[in-house]
Length: 219
Image 1 (cartoon, rainbow, N blue to C red):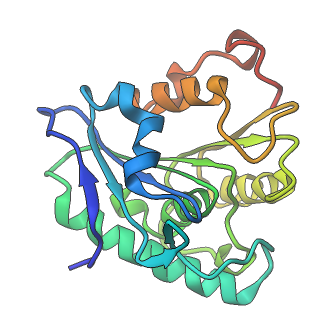
Image 2 (cartoon, rainbow, N blue to C red):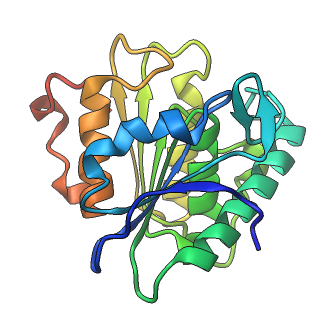
């Protein structure tokens, strides 16, 4: 058992994908699910709560934001392993799985693509990165990744996401990063539109080119 509690929306018949939405530091499923409310009728939406209390919400691991922090890498890997066990327990046979998350949840989304491709068909990290200590080649090719990041993010700089996507590409994974000029550590309306398309279709090819998404920036 994963030991995770999750907010689970009413099931949708196959071939609707299983969507795992992972909140950020201090957030909670009862708030974070709003990112994907419009998709709840067409996907199987599960929003787990992180195991550690933090303020009015929860935390997946101790607060650290440096990509090369060794303690962070170990903590992110442990949390990703826990989420992978949860996915394995709730996934239906042959069901596609899309993982998305913001900030801490974005780090977990990267880690699941890199270290648990067997349970993830597409990862959609937002405002996150893959810790340097987890950029270790495994026996399996990483899951496809479509990452989103505000170019003006001062809490988690976009460089960490750029490096993470480059490393995943080098491992044979299909990794894409789209950035938004002037957007900080948040999820803009345009970013939310892209996330919605990705979780509902599980297909990055369905995302319009950056110039066609309300002026989204290059990347």
